[in-house]
Length: 86
Image 1 (tube, rainbow, N blue to C red):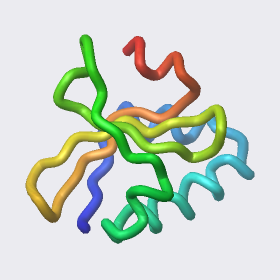
Image 2 (cartoon, rainbow, N blue to C red; image 1 turned 90 degrees about the vertical axis):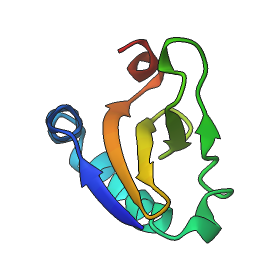
Image 3 (cartoon, rainbow, N blue to C red; image 1 turned 90 degrees about the horizontal axis):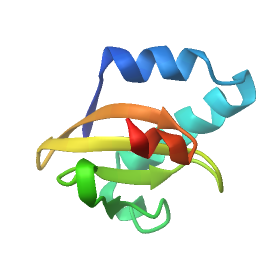
């Protein structure tokens, strides 16, 4: 799967601790293979984020994304549960 990054995602990513950035990169690499989506707890969001999806980096941190096609996604935001409020 091809992954693109929104500028807002990149800004939020740069604010993360280096260890969390590293862990995020590892999870993004796993995310590129659909077989790992269950392990990453990929799920559809509801409410104001309806039509978007999320997956876990760790117990606290999430990445919000949307599918552009079956083989392309764009990562929109990264952070704790407050990321769902944006």
